[in-house]
Image (cartoon, rainbow, N blue to C red; front, side):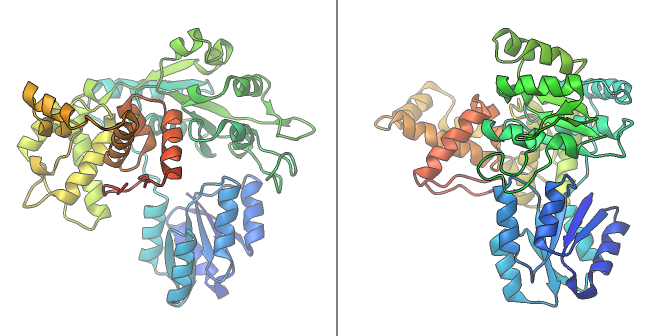
Length: 448
């Protein structure tokens, strides 16, 4: 993990750095907010920032947001200044850590805010076959396309490949092509020069340069605009990129791994994805099966998530009852591993007694079951919709589904059968209309 510490912290900087280094972190330090931002813009990325609370934390976080630099921020300061801690949290800091530093507290923050546990839990022979193939191709520099339904763990497999490659000592940088607006993705990938466009207040190194000598993951690449696909193809062919507003090309040495939850042959045939770029990326294809196609993974993953979220919530890990295991095995898991993870997270919180029983399991099918499985029940459910507009029903369905997914956009879009871009547009519209939209991690039903 890469940790950036901003501020002098009155001599406590050395102690905090040493604790982080002992926990495996690579530490950089900057004295001021501006020098910290300059380092991030120049490609010296970080997985976590710890900033002195006496500095302008709010301005720092605002700059990160305006420049689309996504990094969790933890404020820290000498003593126990409650007011300073509250200001930092309100400004957007994830945590406040009092100094002198506690070894256990620093370790807990590093683990909780910037978790780097990418082990792939599996038992099913189909998943084992995928990982064997990944082991074979990892040492090469060949382009890899990882395909499979949303929620199956495509990014996890990409990190697995990087960790077994010759580039494992260098950076793994991920870009979600579906989460960044089209007009900003070019700058995110290739960087920009100061003044290249409105808001470009300084030179910004893009993800290609940040990942130099390492691996760049282009997540959900099928969402990329065709115009940008052409520029990406040139970067892969020529091993150089052009910063937005730049005067000369910049050489790069990057291994590309791409993922998609779509049928890429259909995307090419439909003219939505360039065939030459597809062939360049698809030297090797790792196809991850849906969770329902690898049933032996369900019980081991369920146990893994129970342990994970029990520890995260300071609770004892309860055993999963036989009845619950049968229920989990019978479910179709349209949201795949991500849905199972969310389900077991809820189960840990809802379970009572000495084990996790069926009453703690909330599945997508329960709403339909509650409405009744016979024709009379279906008719009653339909009658309850009469008099309401399609827009109202659609909004409630989308928000309810997003809430069920703990705010996870990709998972919700998969269950709803719409693209993540369509979902984002809908949620933006609902927010502008004054409705509360669940954010990642939300666990309660929002009030419209």
